[in-house]
Image (cartoon, rainbow over all chains, first blue to last red; front, side, top):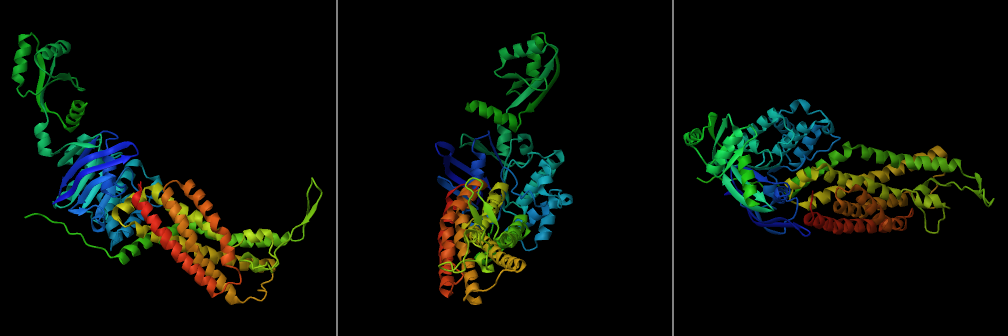
Length: 299
Length: 268
């Protein structure tokens, strides 16, 4: 059984087609990285999963049941765009309201537990409006975690978090899915962070699912490259450009030659052209570069 | 072996109980609720005292030179309602600015209460875990009804206090305490009619508070004049039943429309 199974989902806002024939499968126990450009339809899809906006056509199944089923919905946690908190209430009061909403029997204990998970127990008495952006984000995640949800839908949960906050969230996400039944859908533009936790990916573009893959499949399809530095960078780049199909200079000042794993071949070729290589290494592109490549290919 | 996930069904009564708990908790903790009640208490006291003090004062129109004499209230219960044919000699101010203003006052509460859900983003959390939109409508209507009923009761208390402070007559002019109580009950039972209108307009307007308040005031005004006709001081059991049936019918009918509006439109 899959956590989410979406078939042929469409949504339009007037003449604008936000989501068009989208198919998406989130396996049970997965951390599903939902990636796409701004306006690609990520948030719209997530809102439809949560029943916050009506769909025009298609089907959304959550754990085999229709997404409008109240039993399934009662076990969902959500953070979309911004945490839904009343600014004038304290963090604690906001959490208690949501706990009451979820009919959690031992609400105080549960609220303390989730606040501890996101390291916000010390700020429970603060008014929500006085919290920093990162603190608000943590509160939002804590609120989504209330009631031990089976499915979490998080839209940009890492925005505004500091390095420690991101590490904590990674731990929280991994803890949630470790029993193999609970699943998380995370959309984020921080692809480097996402890559550290995601087990599955879905890339959306113009409201259509471009591709879905596991982390292993992504790893296998990420291009390898040889990165090097020499004494004559411009000449090196020009010479390599004549021999290899894709040669680029990266932000760190290395010349990258893609789809190669043997650095000896390049060293030999440059030596024949009287260029001395000072540093050379082999590596693989990350999710971010893979995604950018994919977007370029699409264009 | 394939892993499975079980989902427990929560009964309607349990869901409703938690929904009401949230709304009433919010209501009793909001400053707005107490400000509205304080206004409902102070308004009849200030109006009665001020108008009694100004009773008999003469004002002259500087352009025409015509003198006019201010007529104050003669009876405390003029703040509650009038009898057919105006036997209590109710003046124009009290004919409009009486307890029936609570029906419009509750509009501010309902509109802000609902639009706050959408403005804060709380509606996202709420509707994600609650697929049944009807429960939200029922809960908001009940919270609005309780607020409205309390406003009416507080206004009544304010009226009695105002009458006592300004030394006005408490004579019921042939009516009984029973009529007065029936009048109050009829007004309370009529409250759901207004609350359900305000709820419908607010769920349609969502985070646009100005639209929900303007729309609700406009919608409420259409029925405002009806209140004094259906709930006069000389109300009987028939008036109470009429208001009760009307209140239930409006709440159910408009509540169903509100539910459809929530179901068919975006909640964010």
